[in-house]
Image 1 (cartoon, rainbow, N blue to C red):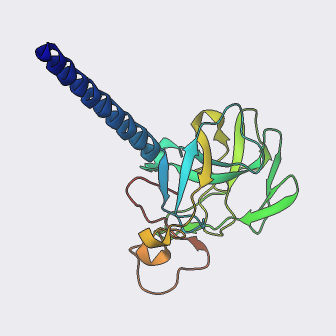
Image 2: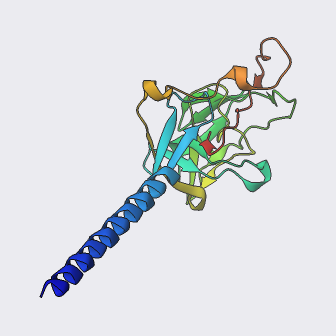
Length: 206
């Protein structure tokens, strides 16, 4: 009678081991999923070190922070993080001095050049069409919808909502992880009419 009890005990031990392995694999899969949704901030035009990308059900609201894919011809390996400042139907105008207005409110100024000397054209004045959004950041060097090469962003290129992650000082995760000292440029201050390029960090957003 002892042998069956020993066999039963061994079988129960194996089952508990299998359950623990399944739980461990499940936790690992959950961690990897969460990690894939975390994007490090590769731009100093924003104060957070990173963002969590969440699904966006429906269309973004005015003022929402979103993550989007920039146009393919820019060759950016990472998505951009910006705020919705113009919904479909909004009026966009560019003044002679480069000031950009959305529905009459001045929200930024276009600079004519990138620091690498590339010419930058302003977004065309007009009405934001259906299914498109004016995406913006307040920093004067933000690379956003004020420039024609970004333009009015179609809904299909918006990846989701972006939620800023809190600072974790003991891990060195505080504020933007990029700053102007990261760029490879000639010594000295940037010209006032040029926007600074964004430093690229692996797995980052800008």
